[in-house]
Amino acid sequence: MDTKYRIAILLTFISLIIFAVPSYLYSQNNKTEIADTTKSSKNFINFFPDTSLALLVAERLNKTITDNVTTGELSNIKGYFEIGPGDVSSLKGIGFLKGLDSLDCYKNEVTELPDEIGNLSNLKSLDLCKAYGLSKIPSQIGRLKHLKYIRLVLTEVKVIPKEIGNLTELRTLLLSCDSLTEIPKEIGNLKKLVELDIHSNSFKSLPNEICNLTSLRSLDISHCGLESLPENIGNLKHLKTLNLFNNDLRRLPQSINKLDNLSYLNVYDNFKLNESYKKYLPKLLKRH
Image (tube, rainbow, N blue to C red):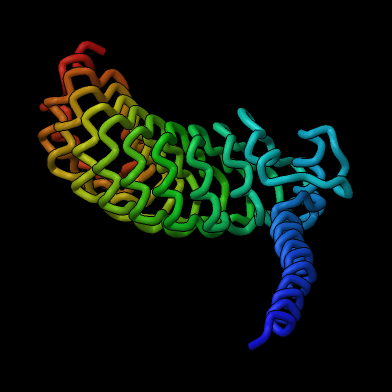
């Protein structure tokens, strides 16, 4: 191969490189732009299909729902967030509000909590009072390990997922939903629970595990059709208030005499109740 031929080949190769490099760089830049586009801001409706919810979130950021917002901005919304009273019917997108520590969702049209509720890992308070159409609580609620307060009052929730037993920081649990037919035995894991209100539901008995709630001070089981109490109810050493009003109890376990801190006991309108329980009332009650 002569020198001229070699030079020609070399020039051709250099020419190819000169044209190829800009093309490659453009291609890479274009890919970066596409990637950046997927991470870029979108308007609020893209995140929250329910317009009423989108309006509430936008207002919190001093924007309108047609403005653009990033997931980073959404996760930086912190503290207390109120949904209601109003026309919100879907909480889809709520999982983007990862900075919230308190969610109050009341008097609206919401029928279920979406699974993404489990993304709110900083949540300490969840209030769903008077979310009248609410009927479903997902198992993902068990991921909210910092929850201390739950209120499900005047809702249509029929089942409490067993994962509620994962919420070991819970102090207050208010479940007067009108529709519950049983309490999951996993409730016995809530060793820090101080107040349990399950009145106005429909169950004849309670799981024995409820007697593991040794921090409990207030227990309301009125208006439930309850026919019996766990025999070890006396394990609730710190219990001060026990409301059993309007049930179908026939007897009280003798272990109630171990409830030395019990200062209030309501057994009115248990028309079948044997009054022998009066022989073994706790000390504080005998003084009244």
